[in-house]
Length: 348
Image (tube, rainbow, N blue to C red; front, side, top):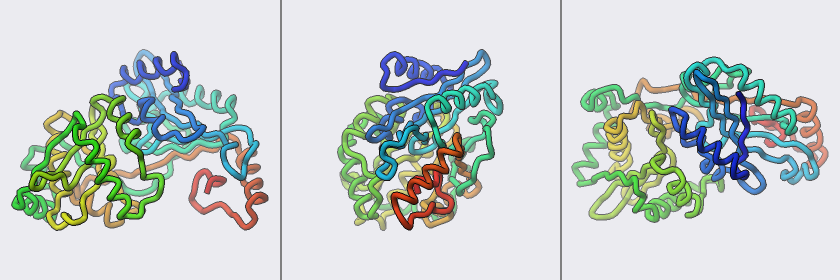
């Protein structure tokens, strides 16, 4: 049976939370508060839910009214996007590789809502996915550190430079602590913001204190903070998210004056050991900013054979409306043309 839940409707939000609690993975990106945190302005958090005796599907979505676009004021309809990170759809049981009724129900709802297109960042793992209605589009590799090795085997599986950097950090007296209670959240926010400033990050990577406070308050047990300490001071920090199987690298930062001590290598190493001790199956380090760049290669050193393809699902639900939006933007913004490879094209 297919259900569509709206986070702003109290009884539907309660049913959403019940469905999330019952799901085997309890993926953080499927929690209503997580989806709301990445919904801006008049965007709204949605969950497409399929349940059957032998399995189910959770599919978190952000519904975005097209009228909020400056050049499309007055437009009817909307489009859909997954929240930041890996958005699903997450399936379990008999729904893995199956559940055609799920997408039939979703498409019927999308037609009634005037959905033009949908964009989804898929899970990295095939055993999380139902059968998709169209072929996904590969983007670039993401790095996953499997945790089914002994600690000694994990250590030997790192690239030589990782082992060297971890030893350097340890020799300098650096230590790492896990902070599941988020007593050091204010320090994390300061270091993270300073890091974004130093990198001249885009506005989308800046979050206020309320964002982080709500994230850790409303996803109890769904996030863990790791800190690297040097002479009584936190010099590197990372906020991770966790499901019942996976620890996800999420957001973090390091004080620039301490780069030479290699604190982030030590942090990743200790986070991996923490995840293994917690009984998790894998640590997702993620990818780079644009393919196999320096960030990607840095992460790959922790799992040299751990590359998995990161894919997205691009769907056009109403081709006529899509064409009309492209034509309308051309009229509103002379000289504008869709950027190749950007989806949906009318938002490029």
